[in-house]
Amino acid sequence: MADKIKDAKIIFVVGGPGSGKGTQCEKVVEKYGYTHLSSGDLLRAEVASGSERGKQLQAIMQKGELVPLDTVLDMIKDAMIAKADVSKGYLIDGYPREVKQGEEFEKKIGAPALLLYIDAKSETMVQRLLKRGQTSGRADDNEETIKKRLDLYYKATEPVIAFYESRGIVRKIDSELPVDEVFKQVSQAIDKLK
Ligand SMILES: Nc1ccn([C@@H]2O[C@H](COP(=O)(O)OP(=O)(O)OP(=O)(O)O)[C@@H](O)[C@H]2O)c(=O)n1
Ligand SMILES: Nc1nc2c(ncn2[C@@H]2O[C@H](COP(=O)(O)OP(=O)(O)O)[C@@H](O)[C@H]2O)c(=O)[nH]1
Ligand SMILES: [Mg+2]
Image (cartoon, rainbow, N blue to C red; front, side, top):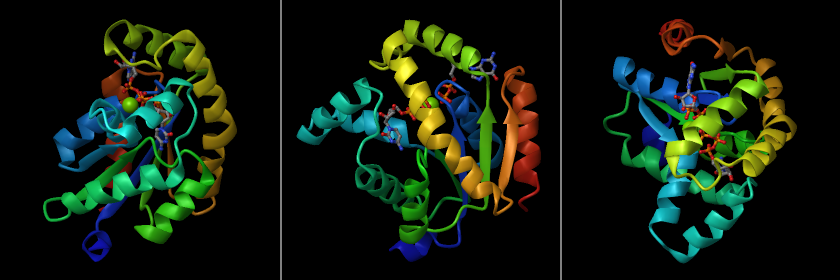
């Protein structure tokens, strides 16, 4: 089954909470027809299902901690396989969160062709998340959990960028600019893939 997705283009979308990953991924879907898989959205769907596993996930996410690696990876893999016949490529949003997650992904699925590093200042991310929190209904868009998510991002996720930099596949995107300007940079990076 996993063979089906071996040749598909895989793009990791990495950046801090509120940096604009989801916003840019939506635009990539529109322009390029890639399949967008947000690991956070997959987890929130499991929580919304009300399953026993969802309840455990909810508790972890509310604290801003990382859920067990295998849980997320299995969800991503299943979602990729489900779209294998129609997909030109995959945007893997919010994953890997730590170097180990990247290594496991490559063992079980395949290597990324590109890593989009969506970069914004921490103050910018906090402001965006507090604003999003007014309407998102997300249990983790509150001041206390935002701080924990940011800390974890700098500690665990930033090393992911250095890890892939040595392979030359990282494109740093300045996400302080207006959405369309950010998307220009994203488009340039994807166009180079072809
Ligand atoms: N690979 C992942 C992705 C998400 N999570 C959990 O799901 C939460 C929300 O993830 P996500 O939606 O990706 O959040 P952020 O990147 O913080 O922000 P955004 O949702 O806006 O992308 C994380 O804090 C974490 O608890 C996780 O453990 N492992
Ligand atoms: N000003 C500005 N706001 C943005 C930009 N990108 C995203 N936002 C806003 O920031 C918030 C977080 O964006 P989102 O895409 O959910 O970020 P994610 O957490 O990285 O997935 C949302 O409320 C967006 O509307 C941008 O380039 N400029
Ligand atoms: Mg998001």
